Length: 114
Length: 107
Image (cartoon, rainbow over all chains, first blue to last red; front, top):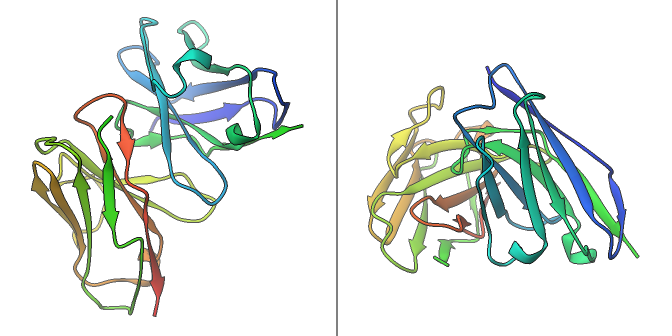
């Protein structure tokens, strides 16, 4: 059974870059799309984008100018960078497999402080 | 972007009730729709994909229907563990977009 685990700082200062990594276990990162989805406290879900195992990406246009996703097949993990963060980026960030995910990480809360 | 509109935004129901949640797409999405259940502090769990295909391991009291622009999730007999928030997700186009959620509460 594939498992995903997010890791990274839980607190990021405004205007800086949020960086998260998702480690995949129980299966190979190859041959799949890997997504990031976020959820502000008490609100709904927002799809951020995906990175394919080859490195190709597809980002939500609402975040495209600030998002970078990458994959490291040798480490079986993939990453998210979100630049120039503001308080509006405070959310639980989930990593997931596929663009219509059945497998999700547990989520990690990232708070942007001023 | 394709806009997904769920209704109602919340509902109160009793154990054993039949519950129906609707999701409408701003344009036709064939049957490219998934339903998720989310409990507080947990990641969403996929219940249905391709509008009506039941995810492995999900109880058969959950069912999905619809195509084009209108979709429904039905819980045939609500159980205590079904009190949660439900989201639809269109997987016809990018960016993927979710409905705003329907919170199912205990009456």
